Image (cartoon, rainbow, N blue to C red):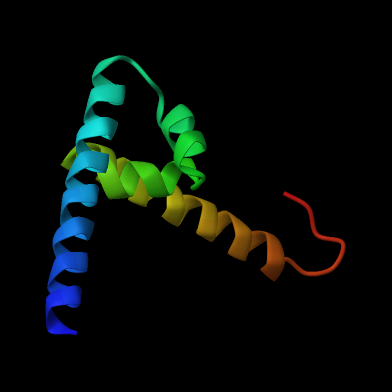
Amino acid sequence: MNDALRRAHKHANIAAAALRQAVREARAAGDSWTEIAGALGIPSLLAQQRFGTGEERDQAHELRLARKLRRRRATSRPSGATG
């Protein structure tokens, strides 16, 4: 069983590296995070956080926090309140 686990782990690492490389190449070719995320079947912010550069990950994190804050504000408004 340990050999099977080691082989599976090795293959998972190879696949992860190949995926990271494919994303880097897609970005270098001008593909947007939305296009990449669509190909991967994940939200674009998640793709950006998982595969982006440090600055791109920071931007995605800030966007997620801003969305979460807007949702909290929207759900915490008193009934009939606007703006």
